[in-house]
Length: 608
Image (cartoon, rainbow, N blue to C red; front, side, top):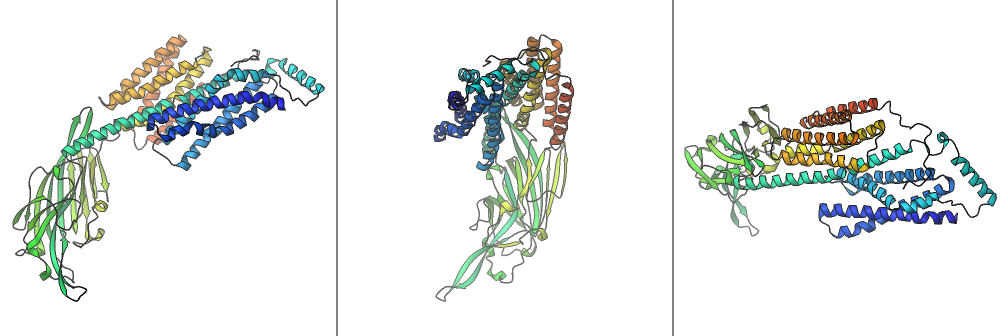
């Protein structure tokens, strides 16, 4: 037994060390590319060896058992491959569990898939670099030193009989080359998913650049706007006794909201180009009409009000968007609002004007004004009134209604949209008088956002999610054609085709920034299909095979384009499509003989 364990120590250690070095190096490069390094980078390589130590122990024990119970070289080789695949599967299934424990991030599954592909690649590389040691141990006649000579002779006799068996009865089944080719193809499919990780990162980088441009233009134009209606801020005085029993006068403020308010807004979209990007802006003309009705609470008398120091105010989030002076007709007075707020900050930003209400009937004080405003992407309102009605009209065909509530009525067409909201005292948790408290504007805002449904970056990102479908089916078709035409395809050729499929996404991303997404998709798909079709023709020297590849790729790209265009029914259509694809693959491969004809000699020499 000591002889067996000593013989397998070197190859097991060689596979473990070289695989861990390769995987740790690959992982360090990816970490350096994504995060720029740091102290964590120094811990990756030691952590890799520590995490892979159980794999070394299992490999060591498994090789020992193979040498003890499997005398034929081919059987040992097959057992080693299955042992390595089993170890890889255990680590592959353990990674998602570990990721759930440690927490998730935006690219969690893409990262996991890339890491698993790197793990498979590292094992292949480690075995290749250790091929000499593996061949020596698999070819060695190693037996336990404690067994008797008779048993050793009997064991050698059994091994000789096994090697002299007919081909159909040998331990290594004749489909092993196909099995190994299938395993290699599967590993290559996972390996080619690594570039999609970087493509997803590139899409996010370009999307972030677009958002920076939008923010820069919005800062110079005007940001998203949030409007309240008009409201009055009226000071009042009350008498209070201090700690010494002396009466003092305290001055506070109450906020009077409109009893009734009607808001009508015409939203005119503007699309501005900055470099290769488009920014959604707008101009709006908004009218406010309504009246105030002062009904004081029982603990406050009208004599306590300081009407001469009142103010009329309006909430506005970005004053840069005001294009014309804002004049309010309040009763018979005309007041021009200017930036600034009262001592009491009811809202985050306000326009205000002083008003003397001493000779004004506040029981029904009517007002109206028209606001010419510009902003970007979003227009929201705050329902600061007892009863209010809001209506927004626009020529933009893609609105998104958001906020505290959806429109009571809305109509969306290609020519634009109309939406209306209605509020009353019954569905708002405040009255028309607010005393000594700020208004939670973020909790009550509502309105509309102008959006581009599935812009080029979102569409490209959705396309990248189908990379596994493209690469898997293309490689599978290569494998089937290789078996049918008996013309081997080298793994490097698989990699080249996989790179061509990956370059499609970079073409799509770059072209979609310059032309419409539909045109960009068509050009990128046509270029990729033509390239792979011609490459298949040069290898198989058969236009029929090349045309089949071109047809399959055309169907795949067309199917993916339909899924990208769909929104609500994409999952249903995609599931049905995948089911049909699977059915076609099963039907097309039903007559393939996955077992080569019997009578071929079994490989008994080292193949590594």
